[in-house]
Image (tube, rainbow, N blue to C red; front, side, top):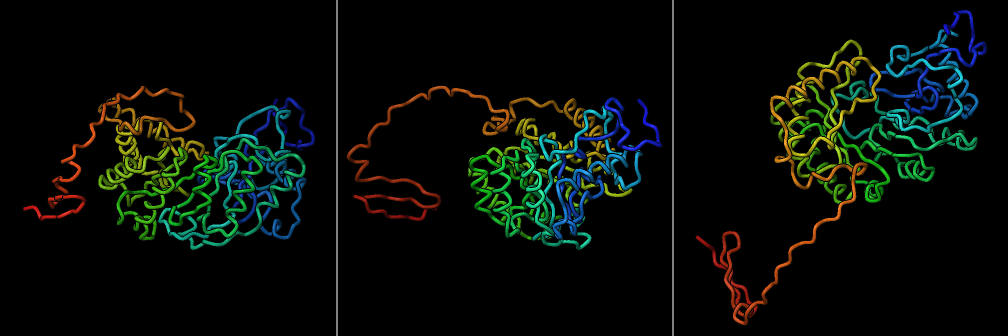
Length: 417
C-alpha cells in the first residue's frame, strides 16, 4: 500500500509498507554529540538524544523510543524533521508496519549498530582521521552506562550484538575496564576493541586469552617511516612488541587492519606488511580505503593497491584470513568500491592462480569461528642414544664465530678464523 502524504504515524495500518532499517529500531551509537542509531562509515543519522540531555539526566527510556519514532516518521514523510543520510542509505528497506518495533536496544549482530565513541581523545594523529584533522580530540562527553541502564531496567536490553568499542584510543580511558566489564557481564555479545596498541593493556590481554573480546589494530604499513607519516607517531616498534604479546595470549581474535591512503600504496609498504602478517599471524586481516567524505571518491589507485595486497597476502595465508572492512557501510560509494574490488581480484586470480603450495603451514588453520575438530596423527618416535663416557667429559663444537671446547665441565672458547 502507498502512504498518503497527509497521514501521520498514528494513522498507519499493520500492512502499510514503510521504509525503515534495523539500526533505527534497535541500534545504539554513541558519538560526541549524543546517541545515534548507527555509524555506517561516511553516513550518519541525526542524534536521537544529545550529549547535553544525557549529561543533564533528562533522558528516559520513553524519550529514546519516541525519538526513534520521530526519525522513522521523517524518513517516511509523515512528519518534518532531520533525517541525516538515512534516505540515501542502502540499509533502508520497505517492510510492513506491523514488523516495526522501537522498544529494544540490541539483539542482532549488525555491523556498526552498536558503537561506543563518546570521546575522541587519542595518543596518535592519523592523517585519515576526521577528528585529528579537525583538531577535535576530546575526553568522554557523558556516561554511556546511564543509557544502557534505561533499557536494562525495562528488560529491553538484548545480547547477540557486534559492539564496536572505538574512539579515540580506548586504553586511554580511565573507566575502560569498568565499561568493558559491564558489556561482558551483561552478555552484550562480541565486543570488538579498536586499539592502536601503543599502550599494552593487561585487561585486553586477559580477555583475548579467554577469547571474550576481539581486538582490531590498524597498522597501515610494515615500514617505520610510512607508519610515522600516516599515524603521526614514531611508535611502530612499540606497537609490534605489544601485538606480539597479545598474539602470544593464544587468541584467534586479533585482527590487523590496513587503511589505504595516498601515502602508503607502495610495493615496499605492501611486502613489509605481508612479512609482518606472516610473523604475527593474526586471526584475520582487513583492508579499508581512506573514507570518501563529502564529494571525494575512492581513488582507482587505492582499489588497485588493495586488490594487489589482498591477492598477494592470500597466496601465503589463505582466503579465510582476509576480509573487507567496509562490508556494512551504507554509502553507495562503498557499494561501487566493493564491486570494483571484486572485479580486480577476479582478474588477478585468473592471471595468477593461487594454490595451496604457497600457504604457510602455520596459517592453514582458519579463524576460530570456522575451526573444525581434527585428530592429529601420532608422531613417529625415534630412540635417543645416551652420550658415551668420552662425550660426557670432552666435546668440541662450533658456536657462531667461536670454537668451544668442554673438558670435565670447563668451557674454553677460541675465536675461529
